Length: 306
Image (cartoon, rainbow, N blue to C red; front, side, top):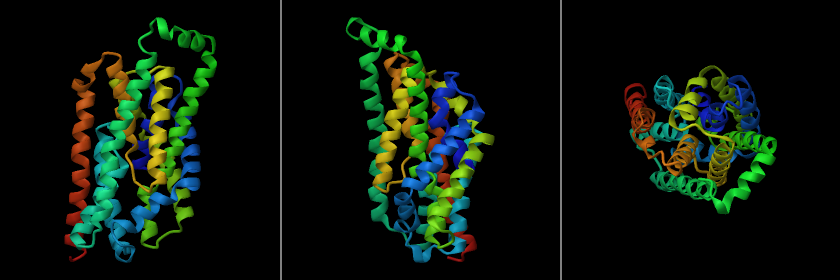
């Protein structure tokens, strides 16, 4: 549920911030498309988190419990601070903390994951920046785009909604596995059943705890309109879906936040990097994974007798 509270913001914060959808409706559509993504294409990331970082034979019930406790510790702090946090970062760092304590960690898998964490958010920023630069600001050679948009505004609203559903689907293919992977690796649940149950719980978390986080991302950084919200959704979801197909647990919130910030830069709102909300996000992103790693490491040492 904590992961769902953090994941709903990148999916629907742009529409929410633009006053195009209410919180409850956003939670409903988020849950539906998240569930579809999890069931149809969430298995690759489950395999990575369920045995590629810590070998599955060492994922006992106690170890899995420590991993989940460690992961949620960082997410709870982020949710309290109203910051959308990477469920992938907190989960991978939690697993890594436990793995180092057990001296049973596959570092080659980590070296495969980390470059994606660096490259894809930067790529999302760059792609969004250059695509939005084509249409903003209005000028002689792009006025035809605006004429077409204003003549088809209802279609544009549909596109914005579809892009949010697309990002929810992509989140299902990747982020739901953060909670399911360790359980499957420990043999505690069937992958399909786990993905289904956890996807629904993501939606419950988005409903009860996600509104304030959507407000942070959708209103406090830079308000988005129909065009920019659609662009952010399409770029973010496509990159996340690519990561899912590669079996990489990827940060949805960081892909989305960097894409949103690119919109702000194009609008000459470079001060967004100095905004209080932006600073709070970057600080939280730096701290919470370390907390998850530390909690995982310490709980393993203290309670598992390692």
